[in-house]
Amino acid sequence: MKLKLQHLVACLPLLWAAAAAAQSEACLPGKAGSSMVCLPRNGHCVQLQIESQATTPFVADAALAKRLAAMRIREPVCWQIAAPVPAAFRLEAQAGGLGADWLGQLESLGVGLYALDDFDAALDSRLEQLSGMRMEADGYRNGTWQLKSERELRPGRYLAVFRVHGSGNWDRQGVMLQIDPQLKPMPAKPGSKP
Image (tube, rainbow, N blue to C red):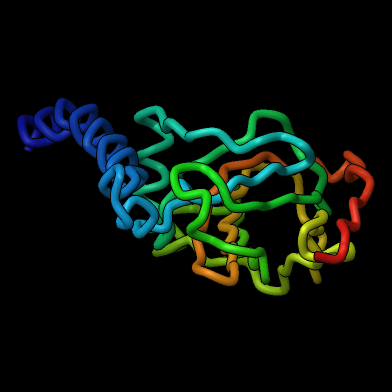
């Protein structure tokens, strides 16, 4: 029994590295130079700015990749922002990235929010999306959108999965972010009528 336990402990770093590799592979775009580049729908054909911070590719260390794998999240986690954001953060979205024409004109923006710090693998089998979350336009669709929540969000790490629908197609970005409810959201930018 002792030998099996030592073998298992010795294998853990390999399992964590495999989880990190699987996470990275889920974030690859489709075939470059083809109409398939956007089809994984993992955020390579939309540009998001959250509180004026552009999302950047997410690279999980082995420990975080292991934790995300234990949560059994159904969404790819491919993006991040560095600085904390307020609970009622504002976001701007537009077509861009590897397929600037893929999305078309912005029509709607949805969000799924997951509280990562609240997950306990001993109690939970899967990380569940928080209910009562929506993105609301501050005016026209080409302006800012604000997160509206039916519950008070606690400080901590969250995964926000944004679904951006346009007149031509849709894309999504799973973004790791840190919420600090003490911060105030940036001013609204109502946009202009197209």
